Every structure is written in C-alpha cells, then in structure tokens.
Image 1 (cartoon, rainbow, N blue to C red):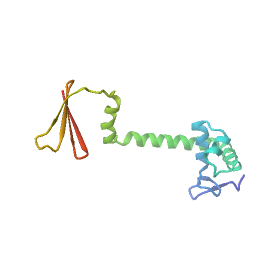
Image 2 (image 1 turned 180 degrees about the vertical axis):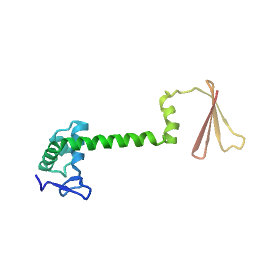
Image 3 (image 1 turned 30 degrees about the vertical axis):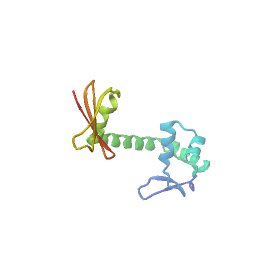
Image 4 (image 1 turned 180 degrees about the horizontal axis):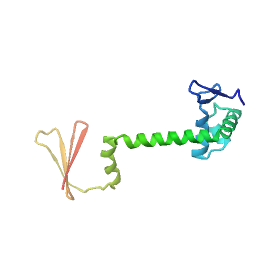
Length: 141
C-alpha cells in the first residue's frame, strides 16, 4: 500500500501519480455514499487499487482523518458566516420567491420622439419601453 500513497511537505496524503488527495476520495464515500465502483466511474483516472488504498489509509487513520474533515467543515461554516451576502444574490432572491404573473396589456403607443414604443397594463401601471433592441420595465402601483 505504501507505494499508492505519498505525502506532501505538509503531511497531506495523496494518491501517487495523481492530483487527488485521499480525503477527496473518502469525502465522495462519506458525502455521497458512493461505492468503490461509483468512485472509479466518477474518477476514471484512479485505478481500483488506488481507491482501495485510500480506504485502507482512511480506516488505519480514521480518527485523525475524521478530525481533519470536521475541522475543515467548521472552517468553511465560519467563513460563510463571516462573509457578507452578495448584493446580487439579495436582489435576485426576492424576485425568485415571487410567482410570475402575466399582466394584460391594454394599450400600445409610440413615444413622442417616435423611436420607442410603450405599452400600458390595466392591472397595474406597468410601462415598458422598447427601443433599438433594448427594453426597460418600470412598475407603479
């Protein structure tokens, strides 16, 4: 088994000849419940022997590997809590939560400059301006 596992300068176990850490294979098993065959299907660059070697290493060092995984999960959760939400996500979220409604259109008219068209809805005062391939929407209740 020793020739299937190598260690980097920080002591992290890697599968020899690949860019895959042992913990990545184990996380596929723990997070997704994948079998050895499914892991091989998802990572065809790994041989079955390499995948089995990752499991052997994990079970021989299970306490420290589980502690490492728990530490990484806690670190990620702390970073997610410390990071402010994205402004774009805040703007999109309320829109996704609302169901889309089709408003009946009561009138279409041309603007004074004759370059844009507008139409007005009867349900709410919805004005849409269409000009030169672009459109804008304003809603007034």
